[in-house]
Image (cartoon, rainbow, N blue to C red):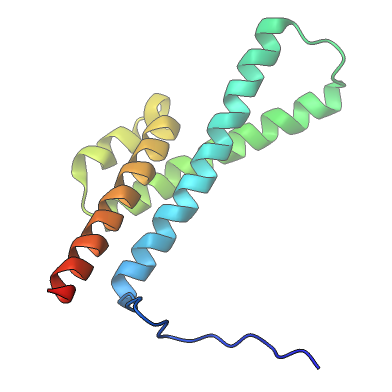
Amino acid sequence: MQRQPTQSRYDGDHEVLDEATRAELKRVTVLFLLSAITLMLFLLYILAEGLGVSFIPPVVWAMWVASLFSGFVATWAYGVYVTIRARRWLWVALCALPPTAVPCAVAYAWIRRGEMEMELHERRERAGR
């Protein structure tokens, strides 16, 4: 009989994240996924238009554009929400501008995740001393 995996709040040397850090990490992760997929859809659209792709049916183009538009709106709204929650006012301004919303959301999520990793690494080093 196979044993079911159990969820543990303590895993050896790994410290448990506090609720605020866990929530911010989740917001940043969702923002990165949403904005990266939207940016990829946009770049593929530009590439397809530039190459003059003609074998894609109009229904697929319509679904592609609808996905691109809904991804843009979701990235725009969620990017502003995440940056306001983090109180990063320059990023709020950049994510609130429609032309820069998606690339700035990708950049913010990537940079903030790196900052959070560095903070956690420094915390672990201080605790180990």
